[in-house]
Image 1 (spheres, rainbow, N blue to C red):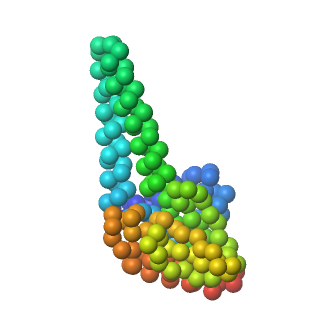
Image 2: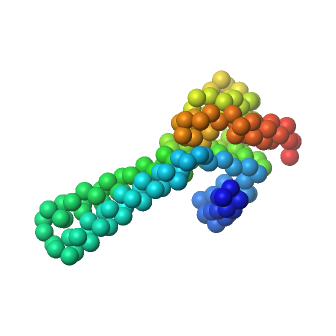
Image 3: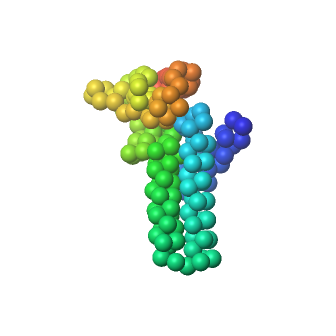
Length: 170
């Protein structure tokens, strides 16, 4: 399953025009792990199917209460799908040749070598410390994002990749 997920991740990154302008294919990439992503997709899918069934019931017998029910399920489905996309499916951390790309629910960050002094593991994910004292957090490695499990093993991979990235000169 992990090979399939890796293949899909790198295929999507290569084919997505928004990611092509972010540089080359990632050297390493991490997304929200565990059962969180499939679970979120399953819940959003079930609600979307329920909205489709409600519209089918309205098509079979068009009454005002059925339109209201179908509209409510559709609104819930759209809201849930948008939340799932921005909070769980879009989130990632990529180490590229010249830049680290962090995509969080609230924004996307690109960190150059000069912007990163070190990386540590915080409660909300991998924290990239800047020379000016500020830090940028990668939510893809947070405890919450991994169904409550600690991200020590994944963070070890991130730290090793970032340490190599920081020591490279070209």
